[in-house]
Structures are given as structure tokens and as C-alpha cells.
Amino acid sequence: MKARDGTRRGWARVWAGMLAGAACVVAGPAGIAAPVSYVREVAPILQRHCNGCHHPGKAKGDVDLTSVASLRRAGRHGAPVVEGKPGESVLLSEVQGAEPAMPKDGKPLSAEQVAVLERWIREGAADDTPPSPPMPTEPPVYASPPVLGAVDWSGDGRWLAVAGRGEVLVFDARSMLRVRRLLGAPRKVDALRFSPDGATLAVLGGEPGVRGILQCWKVEGWRRTVHAEAGHDLLMGLDWHPDGTRIACGGADRTVRVMSARDGSVMASAGVHSDWVRGVAWVDDGRRLVSGGRDRSLRLLEGVTLGLLDVINREGEPVGMVARRPGSEQVAFAGGESRAWLYQAFARPSAADPGQDPNHVREFDVWQGGSTALAFSPDGQWIATAGAPAGVTVQKVEGGGRVVSLPGHEGVVFGLAFDAQGKRLATAGIEGRLRIFSMPQGTLLTNGVPVEVGTVAGGGSAKEARGR
Image (cartoon, rainbow, N blue to C red):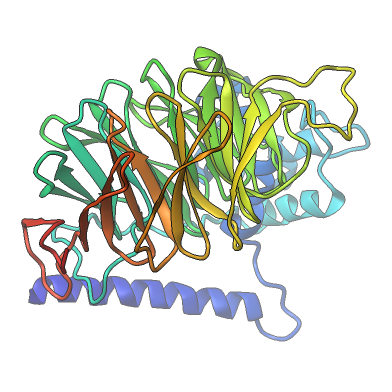
């Protein structure tokens, strides 16, 4: 324990020193400008305007602009960045001038943005990306029940995965005994999902303002096969491609990404939203992708290039999450202001009146504080929605009739998931309690905190941990 405590104290000193140094740099002595920060100033410019065409999965001109290391590597026409030498840096020559060559199909960078890049290079193109913390070897100690941000059942009915703090808890879906604690998950887990064949669990999240993280765990032996970092903020809202080879996600950096399930590499990315991208869903057998953002838009994207095909909704509520209705070309999104909405995932007719909403199908129960989560039953006949103040309801998708209301929640619910047969619904959220209800009766089967509070323990039961 002393060794672990020493390690924690050492990392605490490292982070404290970095934060204190950052504060000094930002403030700086009177009259001295602070050095340009790659993480806070340069990376957001590149993510927004350049990374869609220059990332590992699509490195036009053999140029990858997603990290400082790749910026320093020579492409087909030279190195994008030469430390201390703006005049020799190809990146600057491409974005400067009255008619800049790049971004090729986008709005030119502003004079202020070009000046940031030029000054960063002139100052030495320093990389201030914080180091990744070491992978933990012991489970976290919880002083209070942790927020449970996501849940999912495996398609074969064997497992239930629940997101804790920096870990994923795995339960036997039949006995509800906890069988694994997957350590080293992102500090904040935004979403988790089993692959279509049930062989892999994808876990998505990261560290706010620092890095996004995708992990993949093989169910057989619960081995982590992928730990990939992308961007400098949280990744959000994952969906598996139907063929199980790639994963789509959004992010707080306003970017849609498609990442390889084999090695986590970015296969495509696009900055098509003006705010956080909170959810994505594959449609048309994986040929197209729908993304939803806090900018109140649902966008239909080409599935390989992520090129924008259309905005399929009329501007309405901020999008909190997105899910495809099984067996259809419809998607639902959780509205951050009132309710969940259902839409056809088609391009709008070219002659459509801008004031109309031709893809709109229906909306569901109103939540005073907005909808926080949603999930479809496997047959697509029911939709469960959660919202604020605390509550969960299940409705028929066709017609919107109420199936059941689920009682007892005392905090906002962030995770909803039907099991593979649609006979059980799992809920989890800010209370730190995992609840399982029978469907359609709504009978409470399990109600407990899925971790030991105040101790480190190896096993346990969701039914027994902290009450029923």
C-alpha cells in the first residue's frame, strides 16, 4: 500500500506542478506574452480545419496533422512543421496568402489563427500534451457510490457491463454476480457497447480537455486489445458498424470519427458540427452515418468519407444522444430541453420548405429538465427514455402509448439498456445504483450499488451490494 500511495503522491505532484506552471505561463510577467499552447490553441485549429483530410486513416500528401510528432514528420512536400523555422514549415505556406491552398474545400483560416500557428512554430513548436497516467493495478476505492454513466448487455445474453469511475464492472447476466473489474478504463466513461457478435466490448470516454480514449476488450479472457487516444477532449456516443470492424463516435472537440476496432487508428474524421457531437448511429446497413450535436442538428454523413449529405432535421433541441431504431431507417435522439424525438434517416427532399420538418416522425414523453438517455427494445417496438427530474418511462414507438413507468429513481439516469430478449431493462446514473426491471411489467428485480464503498474487494453481487 505504501508503494501505491507513493505512486499516487508522485503523480499528484507531477499534475500539480504542471498546473502551477501552466498558470504561471498564462499569467506571465508583466509585458511578456505567454508561449502558445499546442493543446489549448493549436490543436483546436487543426482539428477544426485540417484533420478531416490529414489523419492516420486518410493522410493526404502523406501528412498527418493529429499530433506534434506527426506534424514534425516529412510528408510528400516536406515537413509540415520545422521547429523554430516558420519559413520552412509547409503547414504555414499552405494556409497563408490571399488564396491559401488549404483547407481545400473549407473556409480559410483567419489571420489570427494563422498568427497562432506561426508564433507556435517560431517559439519551437513545443508539445504540452499532458502525459498519460500509468495504468492502475488495483481497483479504485469509492468513498461514496460512483456515478454510473453507461450500461449495456451482450447480444448473447451472457454479460452486463456497467461504467464506473476509471473502470468497467462486468456481471454475469443470469446470476447478476460481478465477475470482472476492467481496470484502466477512461477516467470518464461516456459510452460502452458490445460488438454485434458479442466478442468485444468497446469503451469510450477520456479526460475532459486533455484526451479522448477508445478501448476494446475481448470478452474471451477479458483482454484489452485496443487503447487508443484521439483528440484533446472527451470522445462521446459510440456505435459499432454492422460488420464489427469499426466504431463511430463523436466528441467534445466537435469532430465525428470512425476508428478501427482492430488497432484504434482513425479511419476517417470530419468537423461537421459547430458544438459537441453527442451521438452517432450507423444507418443504411452501415453505408451512412447519422451524427447529432449540441448545435441542435442531426447530420447525415457518407459512411466512408464522412462527407456531409444533409441536415435531416429542422433545428430543434440540443442533441444529447442518438440511437437507431432496430429494423428500420429511423433514429431517435434525446433532446436536452424536453424530450426524445424520432426521425427518418433520409436526406430531405430538395424542394422541401425550410420551415417544414419532413423527416420528423414523432416525439415522446416530456421531461421538465430534458431527456438524458434513451434505448430501443431489440425488436424496435418500444423506446425507453429517461429525463430530469429523475424518472424512466417505456413507450410504444408506434403511436407513443405508455407501456410502463419505472419507479424509485432519485437521481438523473444516464444509462439505459434492454437485454437481448427485451425482457429486462437496466438503468444507471447519478445515484450510483444499478437497477434491473422486468419488461413489460416494470417489476424491480435488482437494486444496488455495484461496488463496495469504502473498501477494495474482488467479488460481489449487485443484489447484495448496499441493499436491494
